[in-house]
Length: 193
Image 1 (spheres, rainbow, N blue to C red):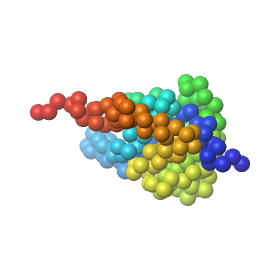
Image 2 (image 1 turned 90 degrees about the vertical axis):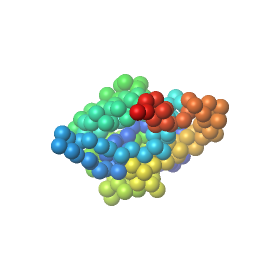
Image 3 (image 1 turned 135 degrees about the vertical axis):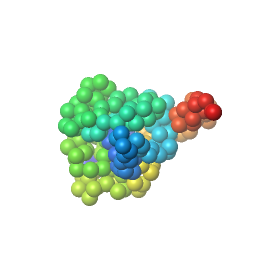
Image 4 (image 1 turned 180 degrees about the horizontal axis):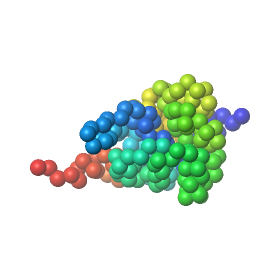
């Protein structure tokens, strides 16, 4: 069986579940439906780093949310599939759109509905607080929980294995304005009252 390092070396696409991975799994509802999700800026910055290094990212989630669409567009996530009850079919769509094989995909998920995809990709991962069945099935269990930097941790695992972490730091040093988090750009673009 291939080592974690070897698996991470071949990754050219990161696919992520949302609730419990990019968020802490909490769902905040008001009278008109979902009103809020909490995303970690470290995860967001990790996705920006990937984009600058020409490694694509994608969302594959069973739920649908305008909040997710807005956040992922802000971060430049290339492929967004929401409402995917059949995650295998959703993965097939992403593979076709991205032009990559399953072996080139890293997938991070946290619950049993992610298992069909987690068992078919080149590198599977989960947050520290994932379901026990998921932790047992993946190649890598993050030290951090969902919504608290697990995606960023996986990004760094991939970039270190590919020998590209120094390149990421150099891009940031040369072009801090283009490599910094989309969160800061979005906040600065909003007019103040």
